[in-house]
Amino acid sequence: MSIAYYYPKNDVSEFENTVFKSLSIDQTLFDKCVKKHRGYAFLLRNWIKEAYQNGASVNDVVLSIKKSSLKIEEIIIDKPLS
Image (cartoon, rainbow, N blue to C red; front, side, top):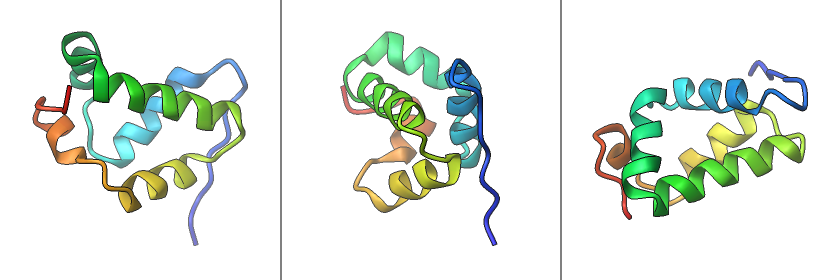
């Protein structure tokens, strides 16, 4: 049984942080990736925000990312596609 987390509409940063924790991605490192590389990391951030705004649960987002062809390992080691 999975646990769904629900956040107030204005708390996208906490939602994103919980998604990243579930994927073993350091939030600070991801923030650096967005500033440094923009492209891939920036798109992922926007996609997570959009999923949040559309009412998706953390679990839904994490599962979608894991099932996708996204190279999460590259973000974890600060080498995302740019």
